[in-house]
Structure formats: C-alpha cells, structure tokens
Image (cartoon, rainbow, N blue to C red; front, side, top):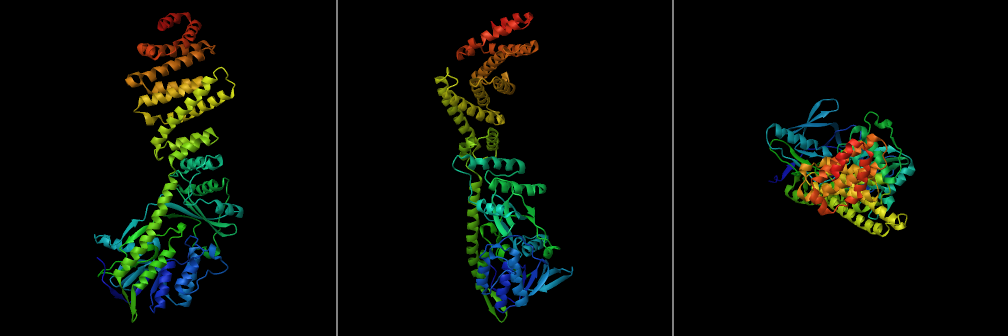
Length: 603
C-alpha cells in the first residue's frame, strides 16, 4: 500500500556522496535548509570516474563543478568529485553539515553519534538515506522492527546474477610502458578466447587452468580487468577475483592476471600514503562486493518514525565498471524533485507519481546490469567445443594435459559431451593412423608412417587423459576396460612395452574376475592376452634369473585366467601363434623344476 501524500518541514540527509550532495544542493536552491550528516572526516573512497561525470553534474546543478588543483577530468576519483561538491555546499551555500554517524530513530527525529562521541538528537520528519551501498538508515530501521519481532519494512534483492561478485580496486605504481600496454589489451566484458587455432592466441587456455588450480578461480574464461590511469606511472585497476581468495594471495593474484593480459611479468608497487590522508589512509588494495541489490519499497512511512526515503546507491547499487551509477542516481533525484511541491518552506511529495516514475528508471538500470551479467556469464563459461577443438594446437604436451584435466572437472560445462567427442576423436585418429600404417608396414621410415605414428600418439594422449579420470567410469566396467584396451592397442603399434604393461595392470587391478559382466568378457580377455604378449616380449631382453622368475609367475597367473575363457579365446581368434614361441623360449630359460608346470599349463 502506497503512503499518502504528506508534507515535510525538517529534512535530514544522511550521507555525503555525489548523489546526496546534489540532492542537498537542489533543496537549498529551492529555498529549503536541510541538515546533512557526513559519516567520514576525510574522503578516501576508492574508484575512478568517467571523464564526463563532472560535466553531467555541472549541467544538472547549473553550477560549474571541477576538481581542485591540476587534476585532469579523465583521471579523477570519486573522492575528487565529493571534495568539489563539499566546497560548493559548505563554503558557498553554507549548508549545515554535521560529522557523525547515524545510530537510531526516534518518533520525531534521528540520533547521531558525533565525532566527539556525544549522542545528538536531530529533529526531522523526513530522512533521506544517501549512504550508498551501506544503507545505514534502512538497515537501522530493519533492526528496530526485528527487535520488536515485526517484519522489517525494507527488502534488498539481487539485480541480475553477476558471475563474479568479488573485485579488487588496486592503486599501484608501475612503469608507464606497462600501463600503456595494459590499457591497449585490457580484458573487457565481451572478451572471449580465440576462435582460431593459433598457438599465440591459445596460450590463455593454459594460464586460465593455472589460475583455477593456484588461486581457485571458478571460471573457464579470463578475469576481467579495467585499467584506469591516474597520472604518469600510477594506475587504478579493477580486477575480478576468486570468491575465496586468501589475503596472502591478493598481490600474487593481481600479478598473475596482469601477466595473462600482456604475456609478461608486470612489476608494480603499492602507492605511498599521501600526507593529506595519513590519519585516514585510502586503501590501496580494496575488496568490494559487486552484486548490485535493489531496495524495496522505495520509501517507508510510519506513524512511529519519520518517513524514510533512500536515494542514490541506497536505492539500487551501481556497477562503475560499466559506467552505471552516478548518471542513473541523478536521473532518480530529478524524478523525485519533480514529484515535490514546495510551499512556505514545506515539501509535499506525490508518492504515487514518484513510485511509478522511479520504478521505470530503476527497471532500465536493472535491464542494463542484467544484460551485462548475462553476457559476462556466457563469455566466462567458454563453450567446451571450442576448448576441445583448440587444445590440440597447444604445442606442449604437458600444457595440453593441464587443459584436458581442467576440462574433465565436474564444473566444466558439457563435460559428458567432452568425453563423447574425445572418444570420437580417438576413433578417427586410430582409423587414419591405421590407413597410413597398413599402407607402409614395410616402410617404417617413410613420411606416411611418421604421419601414422603422429595420429597414434595423439590418440594415446587423449586416452591417457581419459583414464586419469577413471572414477567417472566406475559403474561401467566395459567402458573402462575399452579405454584401457585402446591405450594398449595404440601402445602396441608404437612398440611401447612399458605402457602396455602399465595400463593392463590398471585395468586388471581395478576389475576383478568376479566383477566381469558378460558384455565385457571379450575386452577383459584381450587385455589379459596383450599383457602376456608384452611380458613375453620383455622377457627376451632379460638376463637375470630373478627377473625371469617374476615374469614367469605373472605369465603363469595370466594363463590360468585365459584357460577359464578357452571357448571365448577360440571365438575371438586371438593370435596365439604370436606368443607361443616366446612362451616356449621362456620355459627353456627358467629352472627345470618349473618346466613341467609351464608345459602343462600351455597344453
């Protein structure tokens, strides 16, 4: 239910940011004498403004607003705007400004704790909350009602879904050449990975994987960086950061992200605290929450307390990276003033009109922010097909493995499709390799055989990566055994005996004989056969009796298992002629006492 139109005489504005200051100035120009509470003694709020904000405010106030000294408009911070407005309000307009902190409401006013510690009650019937995202007045009102076990009047709901809610604002010094390079290559909201498979463009794939592992970066796209030069060799950086980044990793995170942008280390130093802000230093590494919230209702009227009306960021949070904040705040106070009538020093507010107007303005800001966050989410969650297509072009095998393993994490979008596509690529690679290999089986030094070998190695690499994540196949022994068997097949083509034995052991250690389902028996038997083949091949180069005995023990155990599948061995037409001569040779080389047992096993 909307509040009825009311008249107000005593206005208290809590907060002295740009929007609060502009509103106070406008009230003063209309013949009113509001009291303003400023909660800080020195202005140290971080943030760099867009260059046209001073012109926008000057036009709205019909009063020239400029930073002090020789500051360039393109390199001014929020504090510089606040300082310029303070000079106009206090020195020129003689606004009553009290330094203190809003603490409580009374029936006819507000309690303020002064800088001296004294509590002062200020009579008022309308309180404007201009404290920004802190929402000091609104939060206090909610607490009062909660203590009375009543529903709090104000609610704060998320605007859109910002995929990265934690950000740094870092003020640092660095060589100008690095600042220029960062400005040129900074990661924008629309930035994505390359769509063309070129090594120099794909390097970020590897670096992003490192950010995920080292710092807990939650996404598969680059962190966004907004670079705002302040003056020569000084810069302000807005940097997205992981949600749970440890304090001791803050500086290393910034270094890693800057290196990702220009592909080299970027040395920087924390700026020294200026003498002006020595007692209240401006934070050089400042963490901010960047999940805007909207306040509803847009005002609150009660018979027990003064009417509460939020403006500026207390009504809806900004996102200054996109230039969304101060302009919109000015538009909303313009709408509020249009819904006011002033007569004999009294204000009448048309709440119904204000509600409709400000709701439409806020809807536009919400749409802007939501669209930006949707776009950012899409660019962060890089399509897995692009990663699958591009990562083989990374020259380093170890780097490719890092990327593949990261894609196999549960948080990677489309992970199941990745597995299917990887298996498909393996099949294609083995098919192509087989064509070249068969055509050149007697010409191992030919160019075509080298091509076949390259395809086999690529197929093997993908299989090795898949098997590292065998837990994902724990309920499907056939799939798991097939993966292991294909690695073994590729390894045989490459004559890699150690790899055959390694992955045969992986398969046989994981899958016990009693667990084998009928549809997986043929793969299981083939792995047993291939391991015997590799062991007997390896035995030809062994000289020590102890080594031969160990091989014999393994072969004997495998033979027992094969005997249980005698009919299947015949059905599969396994080439026993490849292992029987080597088997006989092994029998001849071991102790005579073992020969009878082995020969009987062979029979």
